[in-house]
Amino acid sequence: MEGKKITKVLIANRGEIALRIIRACKELEIQSISIFSTIDASGVWVRKADESYLLEGDPIQVYLDYKNIVAVAKELGADAIHPGYGFLSESPEFAQHCIDNGLIFIGPKPEHIALFGDKMASKVAMKAVGVPVIEGTDEPITNMDDAVKIAKEIGFPVIIKAAFGGGGKGMRIVKKEEDFIPMFEAATKEAERFFGRGDAFIEKYLSNPRHIEVQIVADKYGNVIHLAERDCSIQRKHQKVVEIAPSPRLNNNVRRELLRTSKKAMIKLGYESVGTIEYLVDEDDNFYFIEMNTRVQVEHTITEAISGVDIIYRMIRIAEGQKLPFMQEDIKFRGYAIEFRINAEDPKLGFFPSSGRITSYLSPGGPGVRLDSIGHKDYIVPSNYDSMIGKLIVTGLDWEGVVRKSRRALDEFIIAGIPTNIPLHRQIVRDEDFKEGIFNTTYLDQKLPTFTLDAIHEIEDDQAKYEHIAAIVAALKITNK
Ligand code: ADP
Image 1 (cartoon, rainbow, N blue to C red):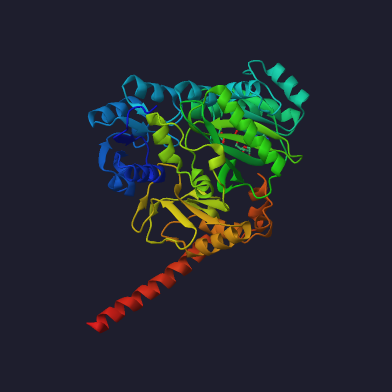
Image 2 (spheres, rainbow, N blue to C red):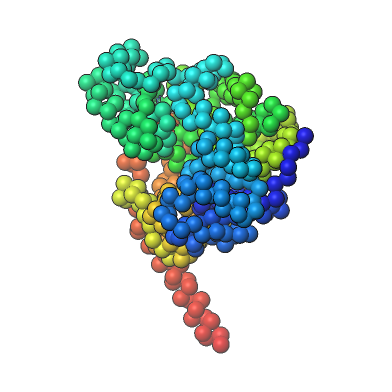
């Protein structure tokens, strides 16, 4: 049942996920290759990989030029490619090109990547295997009169979504009929600009839903398990900010049904590798599929924390053709884990991305703390990429304990020189509703006006304290001489 052992992996990515994959490779004694753009040369992951290869050219395009990446992988003797998340991770052409060139693509089959890359087609496919979907259109909208008619039938508010979209782009919430046409046009234009395809569809807009997603792990032999759910309701502009596993207030019957339905659907579809099925759960506890991500997700860490399964390691073993060494009953979930995305952005400037040199960096530690980050003193955060520089993952045996530990860990975490969203996280973990586990996707919009996000002052105070201590130490060293 074993296929070919992987000996050398090229990581078609950058940043913290590249580092995460390198770490898994080291543990497995697999050689790792990082590729890097000219501005990423000082990235910590570039130094940690066994080999690194400079890709000259546009700093974003080089990570998207899949033909060149495959050529480099072959030239350097890699036998597999891990795509991480973002960039080429959801490109069926890339996955196929790897396979055509004799390389193992560490991820799902190209046909599944293609299917779930189309949100509308994936809703149709999931419905066919028994997964509830949100009421809406299941064919591309070509006629505006029909679109308005359907929207009226569904009833406002509705949400317009880009079929090939992601990252909250090409999405519009329409509250009134008269806004529909201009918003539809704006959504399709945005989708065209970001994804090269303007196809859009309409869905009922749920009020106050929770975003709950299920982690799936499947081998090549039809063995599928779930690794419980994650609650990713705490979002800004439809983008996840804090993720939690398991969901603290999800009804147990709903949870059981959600996990069972997800697993069954994946068995029927013959899915392999890891993947995440995303749902919205409404106020009456109905759940609806919204999309599936056919790759490792940013927040896989919290699932690792509560399940003990190393998801990247498992992805590699599955890609080699190894059968899952455990069954559903073997997985025991323990406690709670919270992931805080650490973004270089300024909470005082509407979370505008920040870039520049980190002048001091004190990382948190101690019991229950994991830090997946590329930040360090003197690292220059580039402005070209996503603003996430790391993830703080805190684990505890119960909800109260994990919140308490998170507060302590966030207070320990000091990044100075550039603004970050750490002050936002410090407010969230002190919020009474959060402490009670009460939140839905509207949580941050409601709370932000009540939070004090004195980012700069707080950081400067911490920085001053740090420098004061450093000065005392320096003085002591001099007197000791
Ligand atoms: P993307 O791929 O762009 O991230 P998703 O379809 O995953 O888009 O949705 C992202 C977020 O947008 C969801 O977590 C939720 O907060 C919101 N959302 C999406 N669809 C709906 C809906 N039908 N009703 C209410 N909120 C929605």
